[in-house]
Length: 153
Image 1 (cartoon, one colour):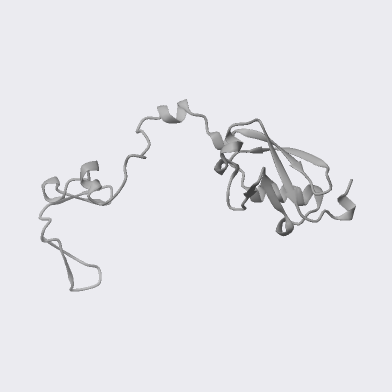
Image 2 (cartoon, rainbow, N blue to C red; image 1 turned 90 degrees about the horizontal axis):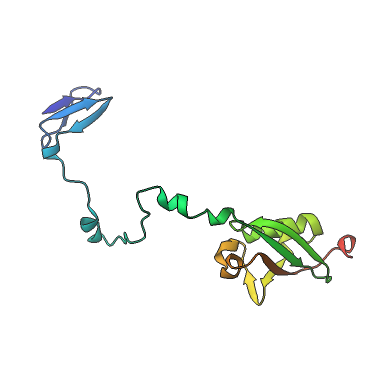
């Protein structure tokens, strides 16, 4: 079967699809001419790991709360020995914490280094990327950097 294109005398060839139906402006090719949809068994040959796919039901979402929306109190140990605290969501990034410290305590984000114990907190990471944050109600973060004289205690 062929179909005239709007550009003139050229024809679009649909030779392997002899029958088609139009439904809501979409062309539906007859089922016997289309390859079957890819099954998980067929996709394994494509080196795709399907073991991590979510269940099809909404039970998964109803049973487990969205952990990234859970709150945690972050206690900042500032360079001058003072302490500040603020509640954050576990999904917030280290960059959000640094932004808070810059706004409230005046230490520029680019000059801050944050540690949880001895572990360096890196900007693109979220609090969820650190297992310690998921297992406690308060998180102690040591901030290194130069505290402006106007912000010192």
